[in-house]
Each structure stands twice: as C-alpha cells, then as structure tokens.
Image 1: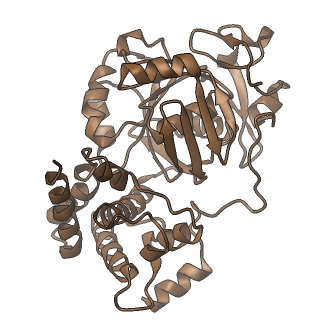
Image 2: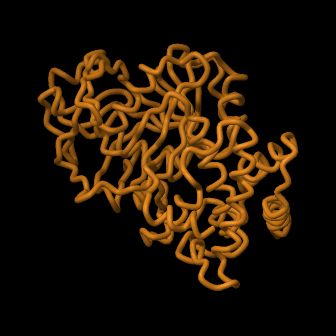
Length: 389
C-alpha cells in the first residue's frame, strides 16, 4: 500500500493530468479545424444554417456537402487528417451527451436524440448553453422521435446503460453509412448495439464530467479526456478521425489501438467511486483518498479497487492506469464531483449498478476471483434502489 501511494505521488494518470497553463476556451477562439480552413469561429446569435444546425456565420463553405469534405488538424502530431464527418448525432442528452453536443456544434452540424419530447422542444427553441470550463452557446435540432432523424455520419451514443437496449433498437435500420461510438459505463455496450445493426463501432469511455442544470444548460466541470478505440474490424484511421474532430471542438480525446485495458481501469474506478458515493451520500472528494487513520474511507476505497484490479488481471487485459492513482489525482483537483449513481439514488431513479458493479461481480464469478467487498457493495446499492418509496 505504501509503495502504491509513493507511486501515486510520483506518477500522474495520463488521463486526468491537466494541461499546464491551460486557460478556459473562449467562444471566439479558432479551433484547429477552423484554422485549417481559414474560417472564423462561430458567433453567438449567428444565423442558424442547415436542417441540423449550429450557430455559425453563413458563407460559401456552409453549402451542404462542403463541410463533409473538410480537414481537421491532429492536435497531437500536427498532421492533417481527412475527416468526412459532416453531421454528428448525439444519442442521449444527459450531462455527457450535452457536453459533446455543445462543443461539437461549434465545428460541425449536430442533431440530438432525446428521451423526452419536452427536452427536444426546449433545445429546439432555446439552444444549449455550456458554462464552466467552456463558455459557449449552440443551436441544435433535437427530436425525441428516431424516425425524424436526418442521415448522419457519426453517432455518439451517450445514454445510460439502463436505456441502451431500447435506444439501440430505435436506431435499427437507420443511418446505414454511419459509424457509432458507444460512451457507456461498464462492459458490453458494443455487444448490445451490435445486435441491432452492422455499423462500424468505436468503443469509448470518458472521464469528463459536469452538471446538467436544466434541459438547456450544462456546466463543464472536469476537463478530462475521452479515450476511444476500434471495436472488431473498425479501422484505426476512422477512430483517429473522430479523435481529431473531438479535439477540434475543444474537448480532450486520445485514440488507442486496444481500449480494453483502459476500459478495465474505468470499470474498477467507476464501480468503486459510484457505489461508495451512492451509499455514503458523499461527492467524490478528499474522503475517497484519505488513508491516514484506520477509520478513513480511503482505506475501504483502496481495498475495493485492489479487488477490482485483481479481476482485470485475471480477465487478461489488466488495467492501463492504476485506479487508485486515478482516484488520488481526481480528488486532489478538488472538484467534489457528484457521481451519476449518487445523483440517481438522490432522485430515486434506477442506477447503472447492473452494468457497472454487476458486470464486475459477474466477471469475477466467471473467472473464479474472490471479491467479497465488491460483492457487498453491489448488493447494498441494489438494496438502496429497492428502498425507493
């Protein structure tokens, strides 16, 4: 344990390390994509263009089909990548979906598929405002009816695991030429989507976080990266195109050839942090990393993560980043983020306990790994759900 703490102090997780000297992105700052095209950035209050639109000046380069053949700069290498993504559909407009929608709408046409009709109507009428680490406003076309969606080139599926089967079924037979990127917690999201279509799939996980204050406003709190990688036969080049697009919007992203070790890092981290937060009512703050006294919560969190890491190692991929180090670094940033499972139990909504904690427990059973603490955490969160009035 001591050796792990020393390593945590000396080595930061590559995902959560902030960029040195990073400033808030301003709306009038040119993105890499805009710079490559010699275009001005979107203006607030600009004219709305296109059937699935955004705030932007209207010019010759706004003609249908022109944006689909643009170039985006790869922020990591300076290389220019041919991006053939003219329209993005955000499937699920919770916190993560809203962050993707608000940022991507600054550089490409964005449509949003919502669960509630009134949510779609609010986005249509008022647009989407992002505050916090970004300050921007975007006009979006939104709908709660999958049959009303226009064709799109990239779908980013951000719904909760509890809704994924229904959402994937609603997309069946649509956007045949699109690539879909799943951004879910837990394991197996790609398999669920695959049952409903043969789209090229990209696996993704994200640590960026925020708070959705209303249907039309989201606060961007933790500017962490989205990790993405190919699923099955999807070419890595396509993954890198999506990586470049996300970066051009001002969000952080990194592509990997094999995402599985990173998915396991996120699963172990998420199962522990979400479960403990849901049961204690605490945001993800310094309590989760404190180990100085025997009664400190950090001791339990550390033990839970050790169990989860053992399952990842038995499964084969292992973990790319030490979940405990990720926890220490995240709490050290002082954001006091409220994990989604805590928000769900506070609102007495169904949680993602099955797709997160349940996935970990089932893998442990399959592999013959004993994880008594994680099993107890899983059972207690399920009991917490059962207590809803």
